[in-house]
Image (cartoon, rainbow, N blue to C red):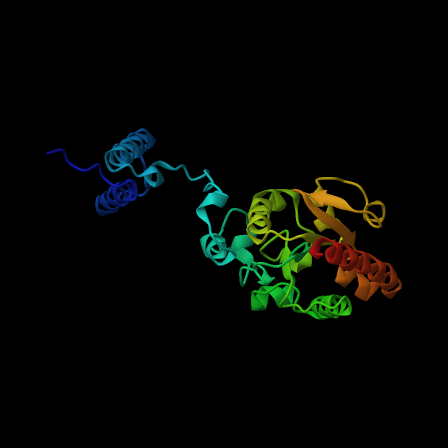
Length: 257
């Protein structure tokens, strides 16, 4: 039976303790020996992984967990449970709550914003602050209830100080939204604001040029309008938003027959 390789931290502690007991005025660590033990420990870990078929045991610290495939899920509830502990980007460490989405999991109409804000981070639900209250009024104005539609964001975690999502954050989180949309299967979608629209349409085109026309996301008709938070700062844009959502309602009625 072979001896288990000595744990690296245990080896260093023992070496330093021995030097102190011997009255040494300087602590010396043999780096060659440290590297030898590190490699031995790594080798043992790999051997154990091969014996147990455990891939997790040989993952490197820098390796991100793979995004689960859509075929693994049969509902948004299942999907949410599988990804709600995500730590793929730094926002996972600063969030209060994971903000997955809210509404009818079989909704025909889906609204997508950019990211949770302070109120959403505290509650774990998208669009619950002042912008959310305005969105509820917009939804109600086209004769839907919040519970009938589905609401989500590009990001599931709040960026610090409500700054814009960074490209690396969206790159990690967007596959989750893509799966979420595929599970819900909406008939029509609405992108709320520039960031959501550009992410969904994979474009750098300004918001003003994206509004007023239909787009297609993965075969789903998509219209672009202002983010409710922007409407709070710029009330003059409300008329344009009203025109956009009326167009959405008309298209939904056409598709619903």
